[in-house]
Image 1 (cartoon, helix red, strand yellow):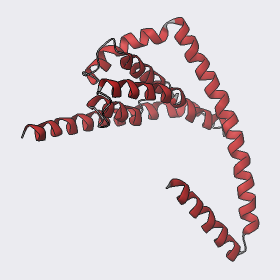
Image 2 (tube, helix red, strand yellow; image 1 turned 90 degrees about the vertical axis):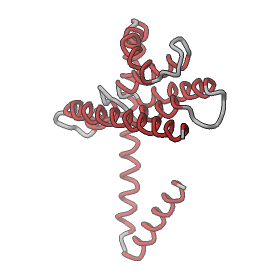
Image 3 (cartoon, helix red, strand yellow; image 1 turned 135 degrees about the vertical axis):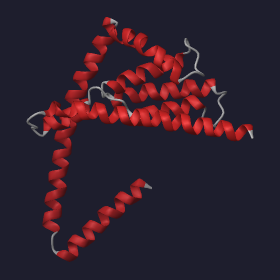
Image 4 (cartoon, rainbow, N blue to C red; image 1 turned 120 degrees about the vertical axis):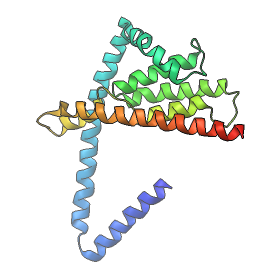
Length: 197
């Protein structure tokens, strides 16, 4: 569906420009945007490599393990159905820590593995369990301490103070995460009440 929307927008722009006599401006915009996209991707890749390297150092030094120990009591309360030593718990913790450091690309494979393990816990049925819904809500809200990708984009475009985004991002993602958890719990308990009736 998204592909069809993009093709429709592209065709509409080309047709409008051909009737309006602005095809040269469209051509300039296409080539300039393509060039900017390549430059942006290379800039983002360098920042992501830097942060992934830091994550690897943190993993080797045992920092991630210590962070997991700190977050484990909180995560156990959020996911009460997941046994403490189950592989899903490890993937959930890794996913949350990667998101905290703004490493969405690194967090995604861990989130997928966590979902696979949670599905096994759910008996491989197609209906999502409470924990699967909670993980999806947490991932979507994305509590972030260091928004690495946004920092990279701001640095790429020569922002005078690229780190100014850190504070507002932390407050915004904290609000979204708390809201996601409250809404998740509200609908879970409402569904339980309906099932009892």
